[in-house]
Amino acid sequence: MNFKEAAILGLYISKDYAEPLFKLLASYHNISASEAASRLNMHIRTVQDFMEAMFLLNILEKEEVYEKKRPYFRYSLKKQKIVMEIDLNNLFKKSQPLNEFLRKIRERKNSGARFSIARNNQYFSSVAIWIGEGRQQKERKISLTVAQGKFLYNLPFPSAETQSISEIMTKAEIEQEFASEILDIVDVLIEYKVIEKE
Image (cartoon, rainbow, N blue to C red; front, side):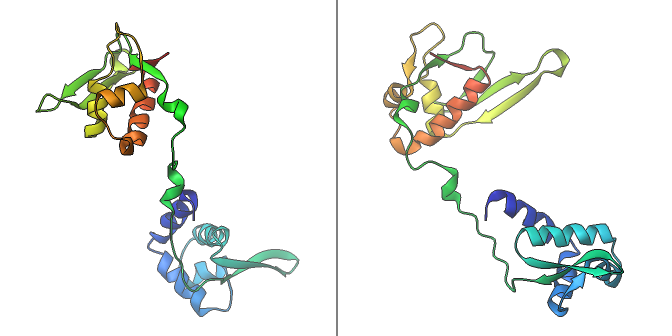
């Protein structure tokens, strides 16, 4: 199950009417949305949306039937057990491309970002960025992991020569296992124009 499907299932399964509807579906050979709505004193559109969502998730089967030349659907349970399983391994790359670490970067001049230093004065604990202009301007504060804080603490100043991500990681003594979170914060700060790349 992917995130989109899990979100749909989670949305509908959390509704107060989900259990009564599933009880009906488990008790009836098949049932229409209007029959289920009437039985539970619910709005037909609410039941129809629920049934269609469960059909798209392959939990229900539907059959088109005709009554007085007007078609409608009857629904029945396809599964007696619903399992929500999301494989998080699909969210991150097993290995990062080498050219990602060869990107040369430094802090952007006049970025307006404010770095807060940790108590031990050895790395940054957060970075605050101003977004928008004038009265609409808002502060966005990003808390940093220790690895990210050490990396940004060693980020070249705007007046200094750019360095590769790999060089900065080596200088900051950051292990390779933290590479994905370093690349993440670099991408975020490039987007917010705090970091510039060569």
